[in-house]
Picture 1 (cartoon, helix red, strand yellow):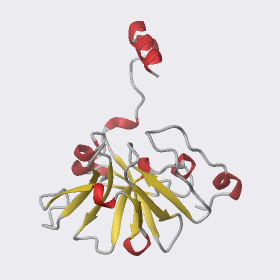
Picture 2 (cartoon, one colour):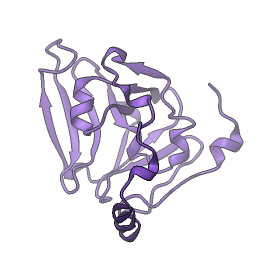
Picture 3 (cartoon, helix red, strand yellow):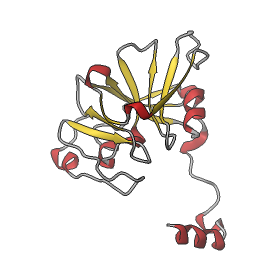
Length: 181
């Protein structure tokens, strides 16, 4: 799906984490961990941008502490570590959702714990990055918008709105949240 140049030129860099030096151009953008110690640059179009998807696999549920993960795939030859490569900690295992025996290795910022990307022995030459680490939020809905869904049978009922109306939230909790932010 093509996006209009007006949509891709409207950048959105909300305050998210410590770092404020993320950037994007027509062809490239950054992804930064929460504390700012690790920053990557990646292409926003092919051939370096291979694809984007929502994953419902059990691994993604567990590793993101969420119901699903929004991911994009970058060819390794096009992925740049701008800073913090030595600050990445890895954890890998072969007992994954895919049950192929291939190893999936996760690369986290060792300071703040942000998962920056995964590399799989069954997916040679590419890295799987998390859309939530991308600094320009406008790319989440344009160039990086997920185009596929993986492991749909493991999808939970997350797409249904909560049954409780917003007013069911206790007033003292709302005050605490407003005070905190």
